[in-house]
Length: 143
Image (cartoon, rainbow, N blue to C red):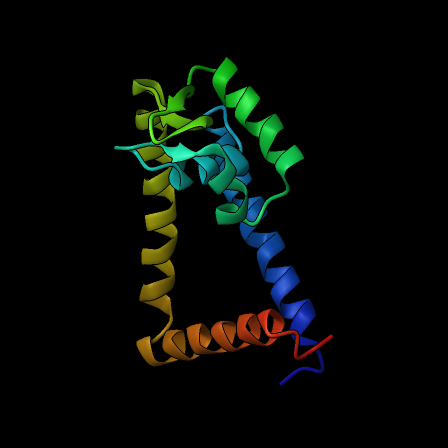
């Protein structure tokens, strides 16, 4: 095995995935961030705006810009939360649902292609490793 750090392998791979998704999203006049947001919104009941940031691991200011852009493009609409008068639910429009399907198809294709090239046991190990890394970080056992 090459002498590379775990951090480098994760970062380089994620940058390649991000670049690939953004290139594909451009074909749909979109971005990876918009596609990821579409997939994070519950298509039936909507999603509270305050829940989206943590769900996506994104800062509120970045998410606000994305949501504003999506609203301007007619992908989403904001509605009052009937269970919390102070809150807002983000709902997908008919156009948003259509673009959500496009995003889902792209992600599923990526998964299908990787799964055909990587044996199940190796994928299971990959997921175990990512789970351990996330647990170590969450439990602050690294820093």
